[in-house]
Structure formats: C-alpha cells, structure tokens
Length: 149
Image (cartoon, rainbow, N blue to C red; front, side, top):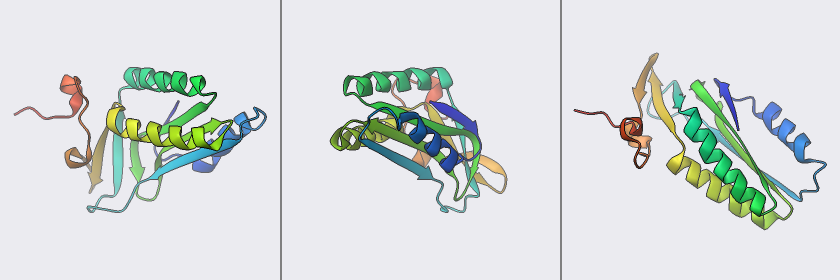
C-alpha cells in the first residue's frame, strides 16, 4: 500500500509493480486506474485518509490474495488531485488470469465501499464534502463523513 501527495505518477508506479512481480512466475497482472473526471464543475478532488484503518483493511486483503497465490498492490492520493490525473491505482498479480480478474473486481468494489477515505470536491479553490458521492462506513461515528445538525 502506497500513499502519495497529489496526483499519482501512473507509469512509474505500475512499471515498478510490474518489475517487482516479473520474476515471480505470475501469469497475470491486472491493473485498475481511477482518474478524476470533469464533472459538476470541479477543478479537482481532495482526499483525506485514516491511515491505520486503511492499512488494516489492505492487510486483510493481502491475506485473502495470499491464500489464492496472488498479490495485491494499491496506491492512493492524499490531498488535491486535478481533473485528468489519477488518484487511485490497484493491481493484482496471480498465477492464473481468472484469480486476478475476480480479485481485482472484489478488491475495487470493497475499496469503494469500505476504505476510510473521504472525498471532497474542489471548486474555486474551496473543498466541499462530496456527500452525494460518498459511501458511509458502518460504525465509523464521526469518521462517517456525516455532518451533525
């Protein structure tokens, strides 16, 4: 798991991951790259991360991957990421393609639902919580992103 300030350097990260597994006899290496879209008049998205929970969540996925002979990689941005830049990359390396295809799908969907990352729209240099595009975390209390009235 890797965290970076600002937009991700996709080629550098994915090439390094590929080099890491290229001599490991994996038959499949599948990446998912999330890019900030130009929508709702945003200039960027901004991300806050609760690292201890994210690390624990990611480690639980590594255990799942290891049981299938696979390895999971992930990089995410902290702070502002401009439209057109990447804020999220994940990858799965496995001996067989079916394992990698299934794991990348499950991992990305669980990431979206359960990773402790809060998203903000950046419009005219102001951060606005993107409540309509966020998924609340069960039991997160104050960390759920919900504003109390």
